[in-house]
Length: 255
Image (cartoon, rainbow, N blue to C red):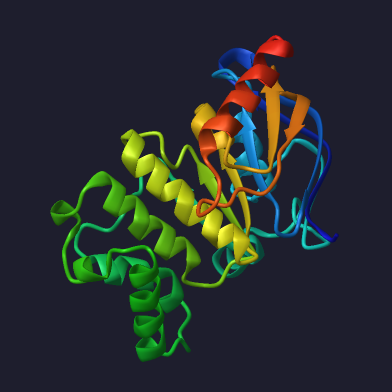
């Protein structure tokens, strides 16, 4: 399999006031294959979100290297990095940050319309298709105050998919949702992954991580262990057994 992400000896340090330095990522090595569904777990402050931000080019590493689709991105100019993030990566966050003055479908379309040569009609049709796929097509012309948290997260997923990214990054994408909405969002992400898109999530939730096929566990800025699982099929598989398997692994390894 081809690696979509390759991080080597990745370090991230942040200098605070009066020269105080915090070493957040410590010699992290990571490979993610095309089509994988990966989650990152660990205690608060372990470096999970920093890892995601640095391998996606949203932040700059202090030392080491990060390759995306075989291309080293850690030394690219910001303009070039922005193009890669726009065209080849999709992002889903706990706080969805939709534009209040736009309808939901316009929020979905927005990243695709940044390009001056975008065909607005084609983008509109694609946005409608994505909203139908995620079950929110009837909300297309609503504003963000007329949708629930779970529905808004689906809008975020549609927006992340509008440019056909190679990978979806999610930072606690279900963190603000109830259990039913979490199940629905994870089923959508599993289906997206089954269709070939690589997905990487940061999560504290065992129920979320149990639906992924590889779980990385971070402590103190390092990936110290990983657990491999089989692909999750929401149509055929009960997640309860996967949760119990992951919980046993966490307990057995002292996490």
